[in-house]
Length: 257
Image 1: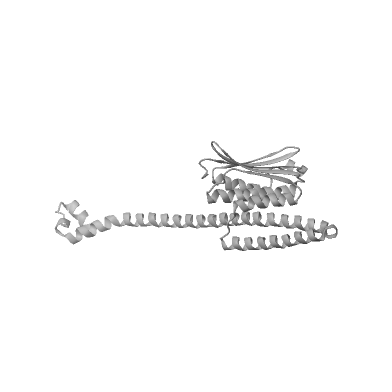
Image 2: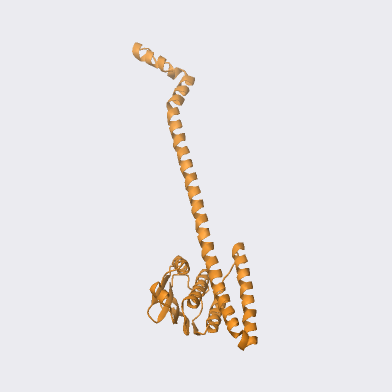
C-alpha cells in the first residue's frame, strides 16, 4: 500500500488513490490502527486500575464493619458482664443475712444475662436498637445498687436516631467505667441544652489511682469518640484526684432536634 504512493512521488506519476475509494479507505484504516490500539490499551489500563480500587474499597469497607461490630460487641458484653459481676457479688454478701434480697439479686442477674444474650443475637442479626431512655434509667438503677447515689437531670432528649444511639452508648460505657474503675458514692448524669447545642455530662467521685493516671485509655472511650465525631461532636474526659468527668458535646448542627 505504501509502495504505490512512493512510486508516484518519485516518478511524478499521478496518485491513483483518489480514484480508488477502496484504497483510500484502507489507507485511512491503516493510519488510524495504531491510535486505536493505543487507546484500547489505555482504556484497558484504566479498567484494571478501577478494578483494583474497587477491591481495595471493598476490603476497607469490610475492615470498618468489623471494627464497628467489635466496638458494639464490646459495649454490650462489657457493660452486662460488669453488672452481672456486681449483682452476683451483692447476692453472695446478702445470702446469709438477707436471703430474700439475695434471691432478688440472683433473679435480676438471670434477667441481665438473658438480655445480654438477646442483644448479642440482635447485634449479629443487624437489628439491634439502643433505647436512650432505658440506658439512662438502667444507669441510675445499677449505680444505686452499687452504692452510689446517682442524680439524673435531663432536658428534652433529642429525636435523631443516630444521636440517641451515640448518647445511649456513652451512658452505657461511662456506667461500666464507674463500676469498674471507682468506688463511687456519688454520680450524676446531666443532659443539658445550650444556645449552641447540647452536652451530656457524666461524673463520679471515688476514682482509682489507675483511672486517674490513664483517663482516656481503653477501646470503649475510643469508640465513643469516633461515634461522636461522626456527628460533629466531641468527647472530653477530665480526671483529678477526687473526680472523674466525661462530657459529650454536640453542636446544633450535629443533628440535634
